[in-house]
Length: 449
Image (cartoon, helix red, strand yellow):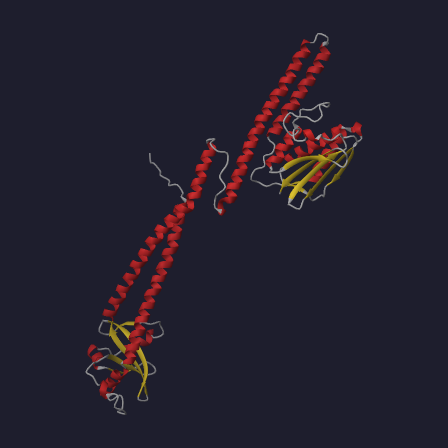
């Protein structure tokens, strides 16, 4: 049995390798350019030095009767120093060779140089004596005569100097790369510290020691931490909703089971009447179970941002409520532009509108009005009004609590407004209760977009 080891993917490793590769590429490119520039600079310096020694070169040309005697400036430069020189015509055919070049057998220097003269200096050739030379081209005019002089210098010493310079350049480059690696490691671990802290805080949340992530993260991680905190808040709210829904369901079922026991114990009811009442309670229990399961799933506004058209849903709910409350002859108004959208899930909007509109239809005298708009702060507004008795100021904050009802004369569980408040809170909005100009209650829902 072979054990296969698969290394884990590490973000730091990728970052280090990529960054170091880029630095190395740029570094070696710069080192290569520096070496070329150094070689060209050395060539130019040597060329300048040779130009300065033109009188000595001219003296050697004079010695071979190539320059007529026209001045005394050659006499003082008539030194025994000799150069390895070849003189070329305009087509770079060798027309004269110095004595040192003759001794070395360098009779084809001009022709060989012509092959490389269009390249960038320094010019390097292996000549007839099997040695390497750096070639220096001097296009000069001496005593009215133009000369293309090729001065040859043994490349051994200069190559040694260039090799030494290259080694020092690459040693310095290696030191820079080593320092860059240290800085990269430091920067990487320093840059990853917020992620390590985030992991630690998430573990703390998972262990129940905290409820959210802290806020002082770098700008690049603010969106992530805000989304995670939003998700944690919604998860906690969802858990609370499940718990509340189960508690309400247990309480409601307990009440109806007690009613069933009372019906079965009532000796004044015949079998048919008792069966009808029991089936009525069973039907209510079935509706309660479905309702509580549905409510337990509300407000799940996750990381996905959804939008729901408001007008079609309000129209659908109003048609249903007209049938339920057909005896009241309710006058319904909807002031909702067709393009307006609710910044959330369709189920959430249906529950909000359903609860508020049902309460309005139930408690109104004859008029209900629903409107939706956007305010100057970039928030979505949903307003439901009626012309009923309204809500007393003393209980406006209480009726959004679970189990508290404004009207105890009509049937209800006292949880509709609490559900609306939970949904609005999960979106970071607010639910306000005011007096309507219809002389009834006015429920205002504000949700940030």
